[in-house]
Length: 529
Image 1 (tube, rainbow, N blue to C red):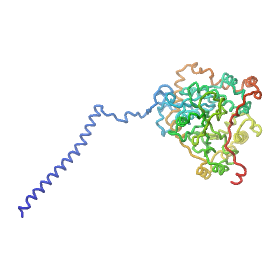
Image 2: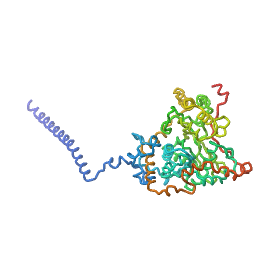
Image 3: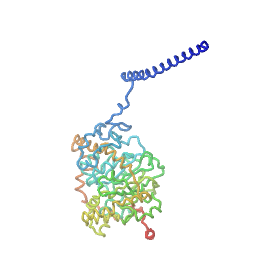
């Protein structure tokens, strides 16, 4: 039997030896292979054959397509502001300073020059007296969403040299001062001989502003055409375009999708609904808005009208008819500050179903006194009708002119601030109120990336390099900010005598569209609710 099992024992031993040898080879291979790969990588790196991806992406200056040739001079000087942002002016330091973190770091080093190869080319015109803390966020936000040109008609604070020096240093921005020469040109405008704006002539405060905006819009059309713009929008510096429904949150994409036969695009407005009375920077602190009637079901709008109005005169505190974009073409004219028209045809217009204008109105308690200080009317019910178009503006002016500071705060919280969280939640769920965060995020990112302080710092550097004559020279219709304050009302009577009597004009057009509020709730509907 031992002879029989001997061959079997020898075969088993041979098999065990073979398995052991194989296992040893596998272990040796697994040990040597990583070592060989590591050595190979070391040799390649030592010879320069590999490039570390992180080394090609600078931490202090990120590069994306379109970031070369900074609009404020050299691209290096424009955004090297990690340590220089503290040198901004004291008036804007709190609002425009760089934050401790960066939610949108890729803005640092971005060119913001959207003119060269984009389509369509979009411009915005405005008439403003605001300061840099409001204009710069407004301006750069619209650059981000696709606007390439800005025609800024400035006066008051906006016309001061320390403000205009910054604005004029930004590529794509044209500053137009309100000088005697400008007013004389506008005196000869054909608008004065037509009837569509006649109801607003020779009245103070908001009526005067409405006429001034229309005249500025008329001049901006010529500038837009000379600059090769395809679309023009009139926007106040307390309004932001919200291009909802467009890919990439892009106004340019939104307008590029418009059919060629569309002449005008209407953006219904949403009104800011502040939740506290100590707002300092509305663009980055306000996220709740009241939706427009055009974007709500009628049953929802009228069913919750009383709660949404909160004993104020109208559904919105101020206007409710939004703003519009017009295709730049022959015979285009303004039709008040909210719409455009055409001398030769009835424009084909559409109303957007998702995009809107975000109107930040009465967002700060100081807005009560600032509006009061801009108008010299008497705080009586009869006199305020001459000065203000909208009912809430009239009430606010009277309160700001007659009430104590404590009474003004109480009135502001009762009529403007949304302090009732249960009501807010109900109206949010029903769709009357909505939360919008995109503009807030974009402007915070711009601020934290140092874009605003970079503009201010670079303007200071440029002003040192330029001569005094160079700083004061502009186009034939520009002048210094001081000239604006010297010529506010002077010459009004002599200009008026040169204008034709409006009633004798044979030209008849539609009336200008004034600021209006959405439809009011009928009394019988109000009783049922």
